[in-house]
Length: 280
Length: 316
Image 1 (cartoon, rainbow over the protein chains, first blue to last red):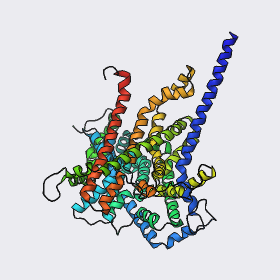
Image 2 (image 1 turned 90 degrees about the horizontal axis):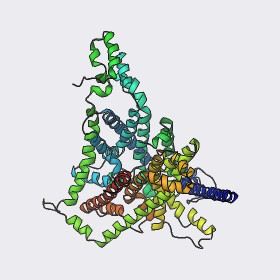
Image 3 (image 1 turned 180 degrees about the horizontal axis):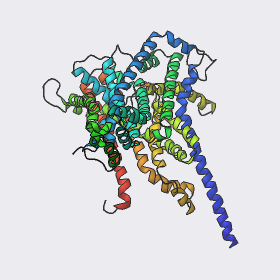
Image 4 (image 1 turned 60 degrees about the horizontal axis):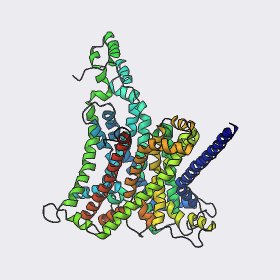
């Protein structure tokens, strides 16, 4: 009998040690994955504050001169303004189309709702390279010139699913009877929409719009096909600077883009919380 | 009748009726913003827009790949030319291999982190989500640029390798396949993490302790209980990763330089540089078919995994 409990004890110790090994492996690989995920971003931000004339990491001397230099680069300023305009216009159109489409997808009771859902979500699945080429061929077959308008519409096509998805998620949580209550208390359709429906959907719409905006603002693949030589967006400018005249101002632009992305993540977190975004 | 009411509407309707509102019959179901219009009509603008600006271009792409060069007939010549070209097959093979490797790496790094996510408190969860979402939403150009800085001759990776004594002179990582593997896996890792976190979070948290109390080690419990249950999520993540990696254009172009060619590079070159649109369209379609084939295979495997082995193993 005493022998057996001794064996039990040994087994328990071995199991403990085995468990410790397991957790060390889980934490170790996780730590590597987290550093790996953050590394390129940290490097860019670090390299942007260097005082040297070349890209250096770790930076040598601290200076913000590459950020101030950005203002004097006219091509960068123009490209940034253009990207901002394209992203704002595309997001506005996508919000109108997407919010409206979310209603039938959530509340509809008609045949083919699932098919409609799949159709409206398909831009998320199609590789943007394939879409860029298809849109280029389509636009030129119609005899249209490549222009900002063409670029905006192509961005709308790829970002509209984000708005639909996040709005639909918010709408699914909204009790339809709230609207009946507002109506029976005398509010008309538009008042009901403005004061009851919209405030409840706002977190979803804001999150979808933020994701849509950043996807359009950062898009390179579709823009490469559809921007044409005269319409240079910021990602295209950045792409060609990295290829042809690489200096720390590239890191400064990239840092600004990272900060904009950071703002989007924070907006999404404030609106619906990161833990809920994962489930979308 | 479209005025028919759901059971829940009657109470409110009753209030309106007793108040003597003449239109009371129309308040209720039809009074909702969302039911005043026929509901499906609200999807019309988005559907029309995508039909014209998304599906029509795709049909056009297909049309360009099969139409005869000058006549009006149809031809499979474009496919024939490409599929008989050994260089094309080499490129396709490289793309497939690269996508498998990247998917394997993201699965290996992603599973432990997603598993850890389900075991830690809310603040650490937030950190993990933040570190996942920030790169996910950061421009691929910016991330690839980060890797260009990291992988260069004087870059941090080479500095690290040399200070560890693993190599005497800088290793060529930038503009090489190895560098692209490393960079692509980082770019794709968030797309693996999100489905994995989703899948692991939905598992019953008491299953693992149950296995442990029955004598399994923690490792055995994860291997025999958690991993099989999370398999659909893992397959979903793997499919997503594979499809995104095989069609990734920016990272291979930037980090790989011109040192090798993958399928997306081929599409871009024929479309923009040599202006052979029929060839570009055909290449893009083959790329799409390969990606879809992987997605469908994965979906079929998931269904078998969920419904097959346990219930219908014998008659499958």
